[in-house]
Image (cartoon, rainbow, N blue to C red; front, side, top):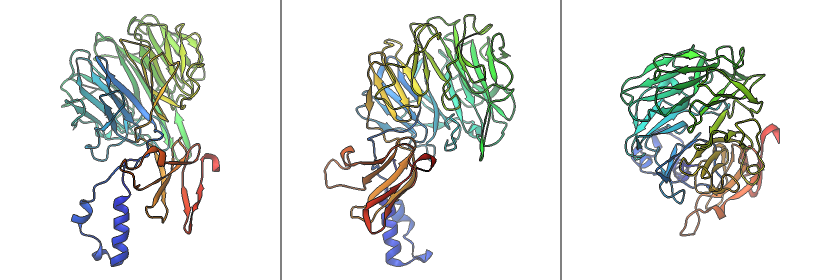
Length: 458
């Protein structure tokens, strides 16, 4: 929760003093002078869509939030800057990409690619040339949801964007886009149909071999269609000019969401996690010409479908889900023993340090976690205000308290201000209930009586 309720209280007070007539509302100058202030909380996090760090300087980390913009730290999470706040109204970010040749060039694809009823859409792609200090819009406004952005290893002006398009209906702005001039112009290099976009794209270090995952999806008020006959994996061997659909060993028919990963230390090995009635983890040893289904694992594909490969070990594979899974035999077997305890579930993002693969940065529905021992232990970063509030309530105390229910992080209450010079701290925050929190209402005459609710009518 990053917006203040301080301005709301002043408007209520003004309206009470002068009446409800529109002409008596406070002047624009007065309202515009009220600066929002963050009141938190940061005692818990919120859904993270992507995490990226600078390989040569892993102290610098970027976090893309499903509905909280982009945060940057330059000291491994001790302090954070909300660097995307200057992009007005654009709080949902699907993916981030740092240019390998110049990590000060940062691309942000807006609109998270997950398929929840509450998934917010974005307005295209943005680029920063100064490490996130400032941003400029670079087009593709009607793509709405972006699953992946990849930047050419040598030429930072060549960028590929996997666009899913509208979640609730068809639109022609779906597919895989490429720019060769830093976003001044875009060409759709892979187009399937107005119903089918591209959810993932992976590029070899040579910049010429690419894989793209086509995804046919549609959410409706009464349900979700996640898959169709137009889904599948495509490959280009010439930098994106020409594409062919891959088949050998891959399932056909109705195919859902697909995640892709190339083994950096053995680039002819490619992994895919495929949503299908006979899906799971697939592996190719010949750049996608043939595939073997090595494991049926595929947790809740519409919400995850993320797979990663250790930079130094092509047999060590991570599958994100709930919990986090790891394989050390090329995907034949998976384990979650070391990662299942003491961290939040629902994992969507994982960055692996190429210089130290035991250094991991994990993003999930609960926020951000750091590990320095290959996931045996985790440190929770408790200073990121990423909570996704479904509904807000207030009471009549002075100072008044703010209440709310969040996505997958329970219901909470916190004061609008305190007498402490430190301001509002995590110690001031009260947890009311667990699970998905929604409306939280306070008795109008007794602030000690609070009603909360959770999923399935609890």
